[in-house]
Length: 274
Image (cartoon, rainbow, N blue to C red; front, side, top):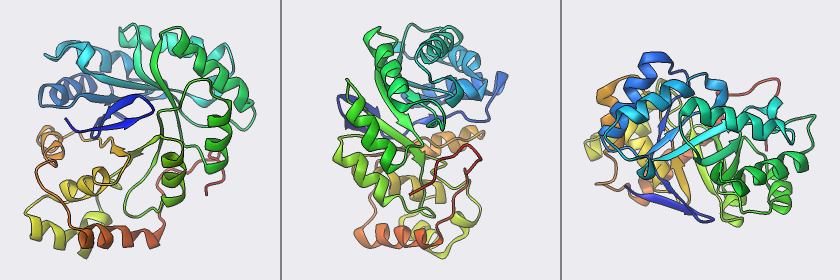
């Protein structure tokens, strides 16, 4: 498995996202992903599926030490004390002693970032998380968080796909040795897969639209992606992207789609985006 090395963390470049997967489906699909080559599983306290994800991990024929497991602490729970308790509860649901990466899911508009970063570092010091990082952080958040953190931050997990330019955030991550982990990396298909740029590259390379777009992600320096699918065949197909390469012109044609600047995940608690 290809990895992205970021501040000491070796993050598998393609992971399996579990947002919206619950119950038996989450358990079955996590086990399926692991049994078919995935080594990076992403969940969160807010997804309400950690117990099922944990069952899926145990059902798979893969040693826990070979799995890179990420979970995230929901933004109302990131005060010092609350954050540690939330992560400990996540570990209990997951049925594991540690996660490989613990992330602040969203920045808070009311809880001081210094308190949250202190608490996040405490989880690493206690061995609850091997690595720590953030999610949905803006440039200002990244600069403040990295200046406050005792341990280096491994990543910023953000929405990223060809319809959304994230050059500023990507540059900030690279400056601080962090990976950018793309969620919603496929823009949920639809108009992205139907674009002439993607269709042209599918024909050129003999690949599916998802494979083309995921290859675009992992071919960028310091970028990993965590696509989600409920289709077992597509889960396997999504991983089959490390035996071909997009040419510079191919990469540029997909990146040019970002002029649309279309964001899927924007909520009342979201920060002011860069």
